[in-house]
Image (cartoon, rainbow, N blue to C red):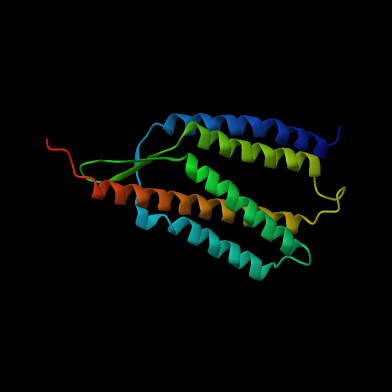
Length: 175
């Protein structure tokens, strides 16, 4: 057995272990209620969009890779919207403070995406068998992540804003 074969098997063996550890940590932190600041939801997608834009300018996709990147962006947006809907958002009736907790479905959804990506990597390998350009695959994954992160935050923003408006309309019960 060659060193590359051993490294490949170690990589495939470690992936489920790392996923299990990450999932266990996320599962433990799932019940932690975190404040949701509507005015800050745009920050992380904006930073990631800047990185994605930099990559697109410095290493632009070639030919049909643009089409596949656009499809990956749309697919990521659909996945992000779905993941955003899975996030639990609560509102304090007295202070109207928004809080969020991860739902088990949202964490499982994320693990499923990573597992599918890992499975695709195992099938595709280095891409030579399917004539895939590793840079194009990277561009597609960046576009997928951009769509996912952005639409998740947009869905959460719209839902939280709607909840906040509804809570402000309802009178608070007397204590």
